[in-house]
Image (cartoon, rainbow, N blue to C red; front, side):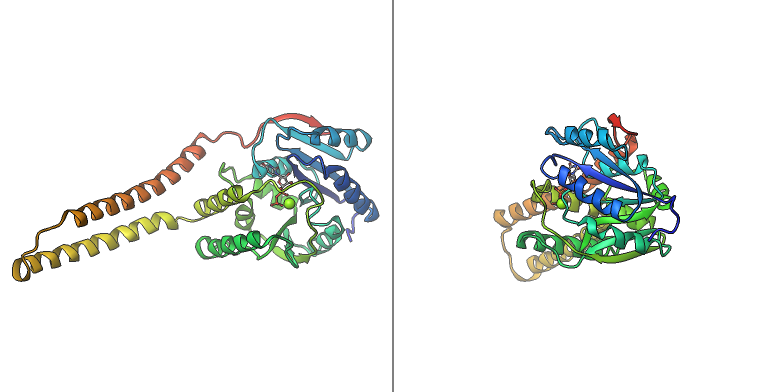
Length: 312
Ligand code: UDP
Ligand code: MG
């Protein structure tokens, strides 16, 4: 357990339409923090919820000044919300968790014990993933693609819960990029990392905000932010086509001159035309994706805009 009584833990919790879980989350978490006799703050970051989430948090914040709330002006996405939370948290250790109680508050102690050993970042991984079959398959593909092409070497079965120290947080905040795949950034900051296994529960209530499309977007973010492979692929494929096309042309010429006097057919020309157009469009599209991302970075807008603060 924490040796120095002055050590403070900041919980960083992004919330987006979480009215069904928020009360229960606060109850369970505070029970645990009080039990552990920790000095703490809970920094909620509301990512533009339109339901009762903000009011429920404010009700609790009146009773308990350790409960703090940042309200983003509109839905920025979870990555930006977490970043906002980290920049306003004041603890020596920061623990990032979701309010849906999938990662149980009971596990907080394990994280503290582990980081107290002198690590800068401790990731939680799920002992066993409680998820639908489709989601499991999707995660499997996602992580193996990521491993293969980005070289990030993220731990498998990553849970949301993770703890890091102030030093780590400061370095993390130096990453100003707009397109942010948080897990990738965490790995990129590096420092001394450790992994612990934690229990999982199903979502306490409410629904997941990440449907298949949002998850796909996240996967694309990860690949385009941490890999130049698609760009290199374009070059490789281009070289292959030039080579292949050259040989084919040469062969056709030889056959036409010395062996068969065939009429070049419309269908084949048409086919090749479409094929090559398709290939060109595909790679122009890839370039466009990167260009778009460069454009976004080049504007270097602030990562988030805060509407209101409570207890901060
Ligand atoms: N979230 C957010 N902004 C969004 C979408 C989600 O801050 O645009 C938060 C959400 O409130 C939750 C966390 O991100 O705290 C993870 O979402 P969820 O539990 O729905 O996803 P899952 O665990 O199913 O991946
Ligand atoms: Mg969740």
